[in-house]
Image 1: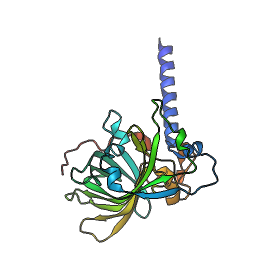
Image 2 (image 1 turned 90 degrees about the horizontal axis):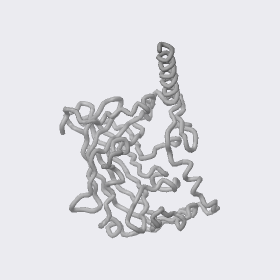
Image 3 (image 1 turned 45 degrees about the horizontal axis):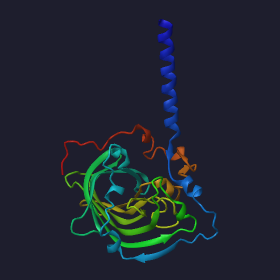
Image 4 (image 1 turned 180 degrees about the horizontal axis):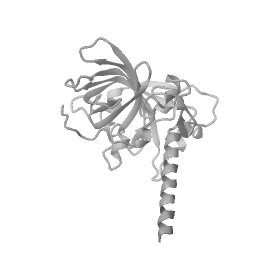
Length: 278
């Protein structure tokens, strides 16, 4: 009996060590490999853009679920990463609620929290969409993009706008995020829509959506740059040289782990409701 218990203990320790080793590798999922997989091999790399009536495009569409997932998998799917400050330290955003404005179809309202070096701040904000373009990427064969239910891709679109998140003014470390916003999404023939990560030469650079701008602390003149995106690993190497490597199983360069990426795999639900109210 003791022998069996000892064997179980040894196996448990081995599995724990293996798990820790996997965490240290910092393997992440991104859409880099998919871009190459979906390529038609065309030598024509110029994405063709055509401006469309943004109100006509979005009047009957609701994009809120592209930002905030309300099903059982919601929590971690609603968290996004980014870089903050001149040293590009990791910052996180969590969207707890996103809804289309009842009066203006080009405005989306946000509620959530930001997390920088464990300084967590609730925020409320909005996204104002200003311009829409339909695009055709010659590297992707849209006619072959089909679901098992027979649905097919109707069109791909790029949106431009402005974003602002106002953190809770009662917190001494709080401020306002203001920046440009870029987003790509696809419309399916039967009405479904999803973020488009497969044209990294335009808009969000393959991040699905991204925002870049400045944060200003309340009552202080200093500005700090920020940038975040749904899949920041599509453009992270443009921010920090050789930040990550790999095409599918992305790994973060060890020299940057100290910038807030050492605890990525802890899956800490830091956004869970606290006593702080806005």
